[in-house]
Amino acid sequence: MSATFSPAGTLRSSYDDIARRVTLAFDAAVDLAPGWQLAFTSLQQLTPVDTDRIDLVEQLASFHRLRPVEPIGLGAGSTWEIGECEVSHQARHANDGPASAYVVSSDGSTVPVTVAPMLGPPALTPARPSVHDLEWLDEHIDASDGRPTLLPYPNHLAITDTTPSDTRTAHLAAFDDGADAAWSAVAALARRRGSDALTDDGTAAVTARLDARLGASAYRLLVDGTSIDGPSIEVTAGDLDGFRHAFVTLAQWLPSGLPNGARIVDRPRYAWRGVHLDVARQWFEPEVVERLIDDAAWRKLSRVHLHLTDDEAWRLPVARYPALAEVGARRGHGLPIPPLLGSGAEPVGRAYTPDEIARWVERADELGVVLVPEIDLPGHLHAALTALPELRDPDDTSEATSVQYFEDNVLVPGIDATHRFIVDVIDAVAELFPTSPWIHVGGDEVPDGAWSGSPIARAWARSHGMSTTNEIEAAIHREVVDAIRDRSGRAVGAWEEAARTRGAVPGDGYVVGWQSIDINRELAARGFDVVIAPGQAYYLDMAEDTAWATPGMSWAGSTSLADVCAFDPEAGWSAAERAHIVGLQACLWTEHVHDEAALRDRLFPRLDAIAERAWTGSIVGGAASVARRSAAIR
Ligand code: ACM
Image (cartoon, rainbow, N blue to C red; front, side, top):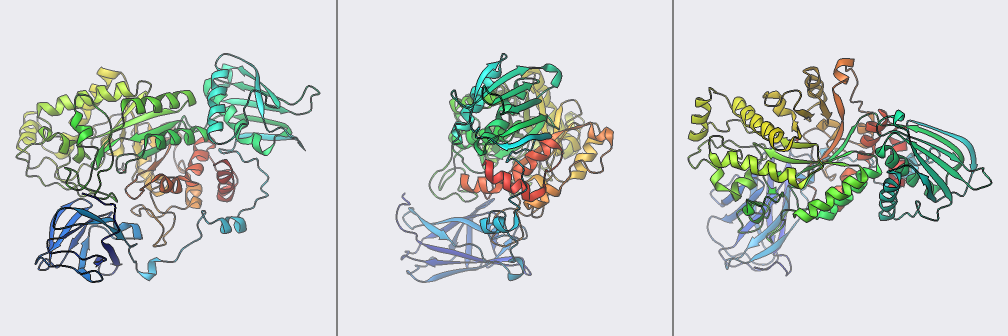
């Protein structure tokens, strides 16, 4: 099986928003002998309408394999009209259509197929200027807003002597315990980003003192460029985090030259300043996560939430279940998990290794970033259930379909293997992430009707006096929470659904409200500590605008930098509700994010607006200022 030669053709698609249908056609570039099939993945599930002509041989979520009902040869230059397909959701962007494709030849070999961007309705195509458009940036962004290019901007910054100095580097001259380690970590971070600003022979002499009275994560910084002994910088920090924050501020500021006098008094508004990355939907090399940890620390974000498991892949190594990595982490043609969400015939993906995870933990610990590993239970488990079929009820007839079109992707209570699996996975995640105070256990999007046709789950539910899906869901959640507490002593994070089913209770840890800001507020009013991440503002997988060609999702609308900046998460909250805000989190789901370049394109500059809001509670200078400072620190 090889995919090294030229494409077998092109898959074309167009979307009709009135009929809500996608029309597909395959232009062959080579001669195909009868017996060939066409496979493709798509963000949407597409179901051909003309079943007299088109045989849908296989369909799993976003994977489709088709063939003509009557086997026919296809000559180079001819077209196979697949015709109209029903779509699972309204399309809003070209990337809602086919994302990858290949031909399976009559001899079983596979040949890649080019995928043309899906054509869309003209009404959906007006573009609004993108902040990635440098010409637009030049025209619209006031480059003279005069602020130092710091991001997040400090809460209090006064330039006390505007005389420009040539102070572009600094060294650590005197320090209290811990400051030297913080300095080394931030200096190394800066070097990885191409700056030698913090260096042993730097121009300015930094003294770093600890003063616990400043409080957690806080720092003060005093620049004096006038002394005859040379420029000096006094740093006072409330704790180790405060030192890191002060040094990041310096490392961002020095390259553009410090003024002769400046004073900063700074502390974060929220302890939880998070960014989430879905490493299940796509395979990202471990270095991508290392770079994300760096990106987080550089913006004074304090949490990196790693979504390690989902229907499409399981990326956590669990020694007791090698199949989770061997089967559950790879997809490709002919494998138990087929290509999905843009992957092709060749096998792709794997689980991360314990050594790779240890490197993340080490990097995060030295930079003061807390990793929050997520194992998504009891739904979103297609990959794990494919790897470990003993976790399924063989007689389950529920056919409960998830929003991403996976059937019966849930843990089944009442099977001994399920309860062992929960414990073993919790032990593994606790061991792999030894310094994480929280384990996030998912809890989102359990499909309607889950367990309804599972004799084992129904018998178990009856014997425990339960009759609804919600009750089962909540009971599994409680089992997981109790196991985490008892076995690892960690607190528990969960998506909002766990609180809605009453599986999660205030005091377990925290919940993330994602479907709307109102839900966050409701949960806070019920006494839950909330991490605010509403899709409408903080899901960075949402497209930045409504243009058809703009990449991204659309279920929560489109979210420009200006939208993110304008969103005030606390607006209208009572003081009692505010007391339950733990912080803010940007989330990046990766269904359509096929590589690191796309990942960075979705993150920046919008993540920087969220980092600023989480640090200061506001956006300093508006979207134009964020865009300018974001570009400068990247
Ligand atoms: C989620 O977006 N399903 C948490």
